[in-house]
Image 1 (cartoon, rainbow, N blue to C red):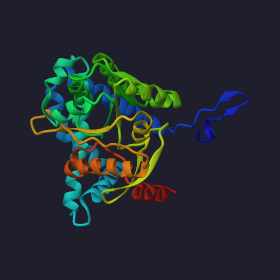
Image 2: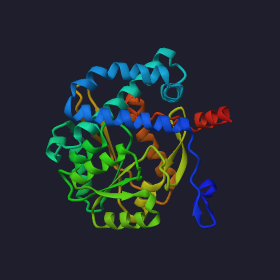
Image 3: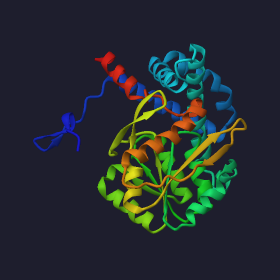
Image 4: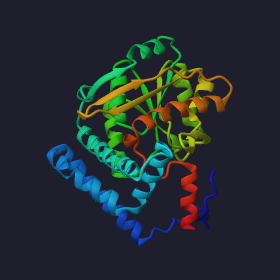
Length: 320
């Protein structure tokens, strides 16, 4: 458990961390923007399409944090030969992809599973997935923050009776809508902030030949991570998928949803990763396949913070 600090008890009463006026204003503005975008995406979809260029320009041009973070990530992904024009193109592309993702959630909030499945253009590796599932050992689906996670889950539900989705509880409106969408899909939510007990449930589900889906490119609070080489730097990736594989005997199956020009989603199912007793080796393989898709589709990697340890540390030092 992390040291409680400001949230520790004082005479039995929790002490809440101080929230600055600026943070409250930014939080309120973000909530208003999300509410508006969700409403228009569902009821007047032409409005988000019309305002998209303005939003991307404003978010990238007026937010030093977003511009700095996406630029730092782009330089790591593209390599030393990248020009400033290349970096800016990727940065603006990431903001646009995030906008599309939020619109997707708003548009999908009342869709049925069948309607979500219709948003899948193609699945590459469907036969491979069937073969993996035919072994009867369960499967740990590991993906990245790309495309549309819920649409990808809807496609996999064509093969599955139960999919357990690992997530972190968030009091915000955005996560509440996503939770409602998952519940309508019939997936089983497993909150990572519940502690060790949730991992025991997931292990047992895998041993019962069920499926667990986890985001593998970001360490959530309550998860442990491992520092791995990733493209042009190092990242902290969650070890949960590898530890689950070791505990259950289930293979890790990398699955990625990518948005294509038509706006629909193409699903890529990669070769399974069989995990032995070497955690570092398995983490290296997982980082390599995630890195392959981030490098191929950098504008679709939905990360608006410095993702690489080198840049995150530099930002913290600058802030200090």
